[in-house]
Structures are given as structure tokens and as C-alpha cells.
Image (cartoon, rainbow, N blue to C red; front, top):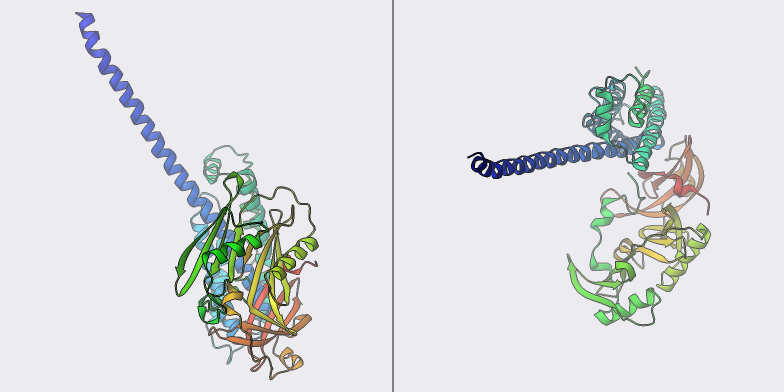
Length: 448
């Protein structure tokens, strides 16, 4: 009888055990899924905080360089918006069990101050010396906070630190806590104690530059898929067009061809070419560059040679950036002594062998013009009077940029020093208005 009962109960017990195991597994999976989701949200909020603090610090520095009251009002409004965004980022981090009120208070004060000054009529009631000094103090303080946040971010990325560990460390009764994130934020909060929001440059930062990408300026005859294959083969220094695939597509009013070449190890070279004129819009070859062998001067030479091969006119390097053993150079067309910022191209060079692994020319292709009115009403000396007198000008030259309404504007560009930062200020060559101010990043100021 016991054997019969055992024979009946044993399968039941096994099924129950399996069911319990499956339930436990699902519970564990759901818990893991929630933890991953929470961790991702914390990571996003933290990196957003770094981004907004970086832009906030830039915008505060920009207010010190501005001389136009209209531009100053816009910049102060941006400061208010960015300080609010940074506060919102802080609110999404698991810092409720850790005192962080001083930084939140500091951001709130920045927001209140910038809003109060920015919304008033600065023509009737301009910025006072006291308010300027306040902005300068805010800029210095935010700069220190930004640097320490960047250090924390660097540790988080390099050591793959988790925010979920912060909660566990803070909830622990152990008095000795050695947590990089906690220690970093404590230092940031300490910096906030005691005090009772951007740019690719004039050709990219301006949203109107994107809106002006129309086919009306395209020149040349229509090209065939075979023409595109031959052009791409020429760019890649290939003896023939074997392996290059081309498909026709349309982006808005512009008909283009997309080309693809498969490389070893599953890598690809991709490019877009206009059907009218066969103008290369962009090329991308995403491959790892493990070891640097070339100097920046050599890489710049490779970029210039590449542009010469495509038939570009005289171009001037305006900035460069170096990341992951790759160097990206921004070039602007030069007409006489005038820089035409709407006509910009970017060339990315691998520093292991000088290979061109990236090219972006949409701004140049769609904004290129043969003729422009490049005769200014104001001389360089007259335009200088409209720029901030606090800035020490290092160089200047005429330049064309996009204005607020999306139309091209002839300006006098002044590059100068204000404190420890450099700025580009563009003064309208006809009216004297301050059209655009750009804080120059460190990579842009390096000597090649």
C-alpha cells in the first residue's frame, strides 16, 4: 500500500518541485529585469546630468563674452533652462538617503538669478557690474563642479560602477564606506557650499543650416549607378568596382544613391551620393584603430590630399578633434580672405595608417554658391567696437554664417580670450549686431 501511495505522490512531488523551480526562476528573472531597468535609468540620469552641467558651464561662460543685449537675454534663458534640467537629473538619482541639498540649492539659485535678469528689458535696464561679477563667480563655481562630475563619470565608465551599489552602500549600517560615486558626489556637494545650459560651430550649431539642405544649389548632370560605383572605387583606391553595391533612394526632394562595400570581418564601407551631379554626401568606414602611428600634422595632410582628390577648392582647417586614435578635421571653404562657414566638410582620419574612415559634406554640397556679396559696410575696426571690450582679440577676419532667420550673413569674426577660455564672436558686417558667439573647445585651440 505504501508503495502505491509513494508511486502516486512521487510524480506529484516532482511536478511541484519543478513548478517551484520554474516560479523561482521567473521571479528571479523579473527581479533581475527590474534591477537592470533601474540601473539603466540611473545611468541615463547621471550622464544627462554631466551633459547638462557641461552645457550650463559653457553657457555661463558665453554670457561673459556677450555684448549684445538680445543675445545676452537668450543666453541667460538657456542658463535657466539648463539649471532646471540638471536639477531634474539629480532628482532621478538614488541620492535621497544622502544629503545633496547644497548642489540642488546652488542650481536653483543659478536658475532664479538667470531668469530674473534674462526676462527683463535689458535695453532699459542693462546688466550691472555687480550682476556681471555674480555671473563670473557662478561660472567659476560651476566649472569646478563640472570637473569633479567628469572625474566621477570617468570612474563610472572605466570601472563599470553600478548605481545599485550606491543604494546598498548608503543603506548599509557599516560606517566605513569607500564608494567612488558617493565620495565624488560628496565632494561636488562640498564645492556647492558657501554660495548664499551649444556647439559645433557656426555651420553646424545653427539649425537653419539643416533646413537649408535643399537640392536647388546642386549642379551637374544626372549620374547612373555605374557612375557611382566608379566614384566610390576611386575614393577607396580600388582597381575596379567589384563588390560595390548601389541602390537608388529618395530623401525628401533629393534623389540619392547609397553605396555599400563589404570588407573582411563583417565590416562595411557605406556612402551616399546625389543623383544630380554625383556629389558625395558622406562616407563611413567603421573599423577599430588600435595603435597610433601618425602625427596630427601627417593626418591633416592626408585629409587635405583627400579633399584635393575630390576636387574641392581652397579650404581652411577651423577645428579638429582627436578620439580613439582617430582625428576629425573640420574644413571651411575660403573665398579670398572670407571664411564661408555654411560650406563645411569634416574628414576623419585613422592615425594608424592615414586611411580616410569618415567624410561628411552635406553642408558644403547643399549650401555651395559660386557668387555672394562679400562687401561689408563696416570695417574690421568699426565692427570691433560692437564686440565685448573685455575680450582680448587674437585674430579676426570676415566670415559668412547663418543668422537667426536662416539667411546668410556677412560678419567680422573675432577670436579672443576672456579669462581662461577662448571665444569666437561674429559681428554683423552691415549692422554691428552680435550674430553668434561660440565657446572654443580645447581641441579647437591646439596648434597643429
